[in-house]
Image (cartoon, rainbow, N blue to C red; front, side, top):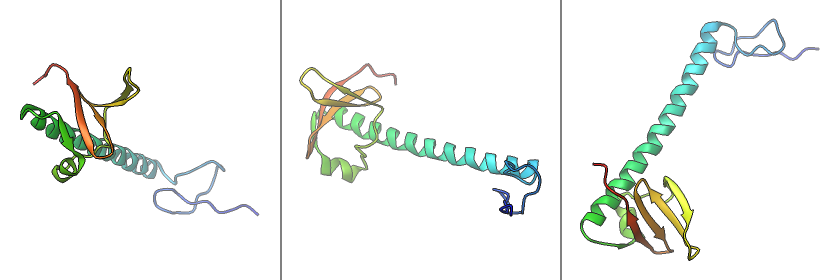
Length: 120
């Protein structure tokens, strides 16, 4: 006996080809548009977090500091797990980048390595 299959969008029972996933073009479009919207929202959330990290680091570097406590950064909203690039330097340290700001992280501190030319 053939197993019943249902539309991924609306849940109606499907008839026809065994690989059919949607009952109509409208359901197919609606389902695909919803998936695209979810992906856009995820990308937007990541970009907002990166922009927040960058803003925090830029403000702190402009105030003259080079080493900051991770607790302070967390209180400001910094998320160390969001970076734009990860590289290893000659000493074997992992260097994180948030756009043009390079830094390394220890268990309790974040230390500025360098900052590229500002594009502001």
